[in-house]
Length: 146
Image 1 (cartoon, rainbow, N blue to C red):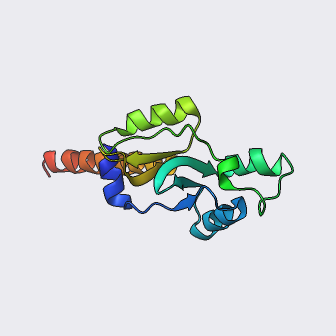
Image 2: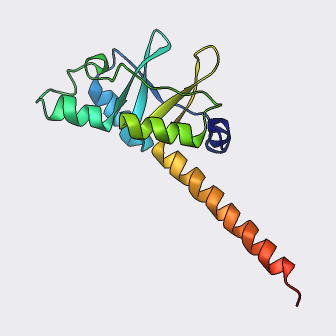
């Protein structure tokens, strides 16, 4: 299964935050939308990502004030991205290797078209396994006489 199939089922809605926004506002948006990361945009283009882990490590544990700290000061700048043609296995490899939970999805012009999480991949794998089991059951039960 490829990323485009996951995005088709999930939808391409991506929540973003401007690099100049305060961390508090980013965390509030993540809480409101019940998500674990936001794509950070600089002049309308992807320039980073902010996650719960960034907040924990770079604000809470450093004694910073979230209402006084801009997102650009704590965002992860080296963002790993994928295209719609990446497979689930490709994504799992990147996520495991880099110890990340979210991958922005870019089109051929580097425009942001979606984001996938480790949860999206796990769900896709479970759905595929469920379908395979169902197909095998149907095959077995239909091939026996009686």
